[in-house]
Image 1: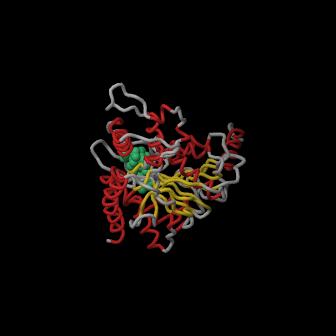
Image 2: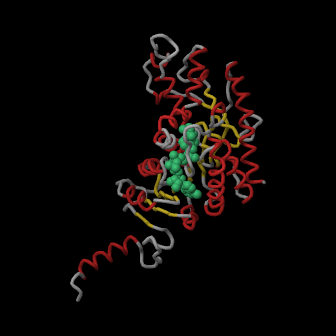
Image 3: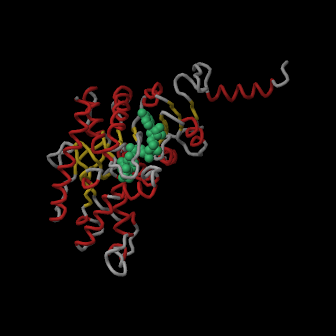
Length: 373
Ligand SMILES: NC(=O)C1=CN([C@@H]2O[C@H](COP(=O)(O)OP(=O)(O)OC[C@H]3O[C@@H](n4cnc5c(N)ncnc54)[C@H](O)[C@@H]3O)[C@@H](O)[C@H]2O)C=CC1
Ligand SMILES: O=C([O-])CC(=O)C(=O)O
């Protein structure tokens, strides 16, 4: 008998629990079905969610927060690097979702099989001096590849696109799905939630530097909790295409022209504010993970049948003449159920909308022709 056989048997028992013997091991020490499989006992009933780009700046906190979400029963973490570590780490959290990691292109399709919701934060982020459109050359190809696999393995999944430039990556995803014959416009949503989150925060917490003693905005004077504030943000997700409708803030607040100009500019440039503060180390990740989870949770609640789930999202739209536009939509069991009208706009918002539409049309066309070329 070998001296260590007791310990070896125990290790063999643990290892066969993690990797059932009928599954072939691969080079990562996992099965041939999944690279590594960190299974929490007592997995809860719920939805299957995949995060593509799960090891990144957004992906990691997003994965952690989705592991906490009680609506999630299975969480698949896919990236081209570092998923074994992220998966192992997150799998130790004592919440119900079963976490599985997938590494590299040849495990992409396994990561997607049977998913109800796919969240895509894969791709490169901005550095100071760059626009979101400067990311197009790299991120367009990444989103294309990921969506081709979604079309094959979970064509009915709700897809949340975070990768920038969202104004173009959503049209890219749509074209890929059209080509594959799986396109359902209701199920493809560009995530603009961070613009809403920022707008809700800024209307409360901004003091106006242009005024002498920095008096507080009206809403802050009212002493509101940001969670009770609702600022619709329409258009798209880049610069002037981000259009907060401050005339429709709830609870109703009125702002001076200077306040509107200041707030609109801050909301439109919130991303750049973070990129500059991070000074080369990337763009918003933590607030984005928060916003992505808020949005994903809304999609899952709607999938489950909750009524009256309304969020802003960048979608295949009938609200304007543009093929894609961000506005409030009602979410349901099949994704987007209804477009809410833009509502009455102020003169400032009407003029801003016209400028936004011009830029949006170009970004949409760029995405479409990337696939149709
Ligand atoms: N929609 C929005 O409001 C926001 C969008 N973003 C965008 O999200 C994207 C990700 O940002 P970060 O997480 O900060 O970047 P990051 O560089 O920290 O993470 C990106 C992750 O994507 C992975 N990746 C690269 N190619 C991949 C592929 N082919 N398949 C799967 N994964 C792949 C990388 O390995 C990395 O782990 C960027 O494009 C950024 O501009 C960022 C903030 C807000
Ligand atoms: O600004 C960026 O590059 C990232 C982003 O989309 C945002 O923070 O809104």
